[in-house]
Length: 319
Image (cartoon, rainbow, N blue to C red; front, top):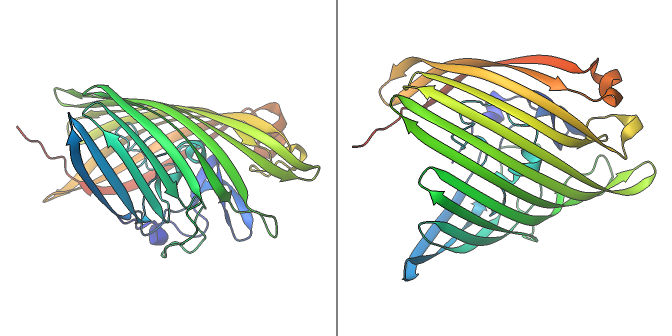
């Protein structure tokens, strides 16, 4: 799996109010989403039956996704029409591109139990290579499908040296846990999809007063409603804790500040060419800020908007 973002998203990334995670040009990113790697996946998977409805699977490669978190936002049915990353991305699904991973698990038609060892370090600013590193991080995940339209998962892991330090500061390791529930239902002329997700990060943060243990949380609810193959509406609600250091709020570097974000948008297919659909869309957003961040952002509510063009394969129907 490849991404064109190393060329279509220039510099340190696209504007995304309250987004944090990774470094660029010697400083940590805030209010901006970094581009994805060119090589989003270079991996292979093998599975075989082991009796009584059970199967064993092994998966791994130079780039791939460990058993940690829900499906990444570009691939969730509730989120795929919206190219803007959630502000909780680095609490939920940021490990969906990991440079070095091995996963093994057992599964049936209803549930799956898997464990991974992987390189938990965030990639560097060179987005067209593979950042090889020690596979000294680990995770586990239990997924369950109570019905054909619903999937739930719980997972936890340790990300060794996950976030790069600013300047000469050391890298930060993170302990992460997530839980999510996704529901997809086919309608007579479209699809309704929703996802609820929760993530928590625990880490030791180096601040001007020393090393401070910090625990921060993220909650997400999102959905999409398509009317046929041409029109899709989508929305997202998020609440999360952001360390003051991540937002460059220098007075509160040792504190976790609760922020929120609302987003609603629309996309429509404007052209079709064989098996490819070209769409255009947009979204309106508002960030919700606590009083301590008002001097940095200008008040309780900070509006924003996004406009985009996407190209994707057409939906294939089988009967």
